[in-house]
Every structure is written in C-alpha cells, then in structure tokens.
Length: 148
Image 1: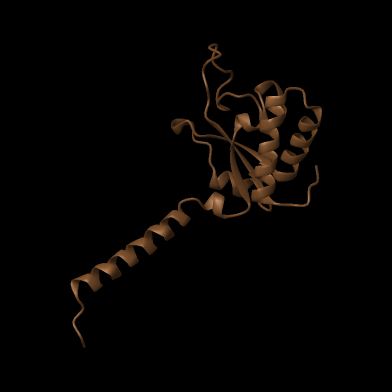
Image 2: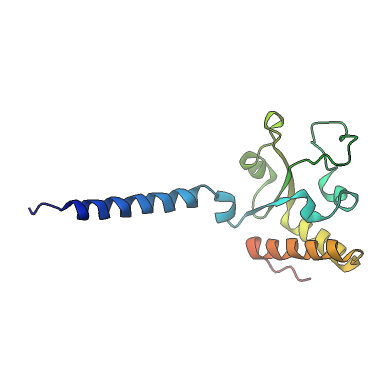
C-alpha cells in the first residue's frame, strides 16, 4: 500500500470538512428546507391595526397589554404552515416567554385569504407592496393552487 502524501491527506481532510459543513448548514434550517412552514415577521402582514384580526395584538402574547411607548418593538414571528397540525407547528416553534420567543401560527390557506383580501383593498401602496411580497414568499415556499 502506497504512502499518502501530506498534500493528499490535506485534500481529503478539506473535502470531508466541507461536506460536514454543508450538511450542518442544511440541518440548521429545517423550517426553510421543509416545504411545510415559512417563518415571517409580524409586520409582513401589515400594521397592527390591520394584522391583529389574524395575528392578535403586536405585543408579547403572555402580557395583558403592550408598552405605552409607541417606539417599543416586539420581535414576534409568524409561522405559516401547510400539511401539519397546529400542535406539530407549536412543537417545532414553541413560545418561550423567558427567551422573549413569541410565535403566531397561521394556516397557509387562512394567510392567503387574508393577504388576498387586503391586497385587493390596496389602501396604502407601501403596505400593499409588502403584503404582495409576503404572498409571493408563501406561494414560493408552501406552494399551492391558490389564485389571486
């Protein structure tokens, strides 16, 4: 058996390391790799005055009310999902108050109906543009036959 040179061993090590990093990167984002959920921001569904009907108020769901300071922001994420139960989604994306981890869960079809209705209203151009981008992201990720 021929001895391998240092250069050959290094090349093998780099290849193995690169493969491991690629696999780790794919495993780190299961919600994006799987085509059954899409993680969005609360604001992707419009301002609170509009979105609260779908998502609830834009403050931590474990609090009774929001801050009196209108500049306070809450990092609320919205999980749109398809072909899963709500329990499965809640297990993947748990609300954890101690970590300020707040998720709102919206079935794909419900999100699409909401977006279609508010895009058709076209009240404020910037809001309509953001809602349209959100709708496009949902279609691209979760697919479906929903027509605008």
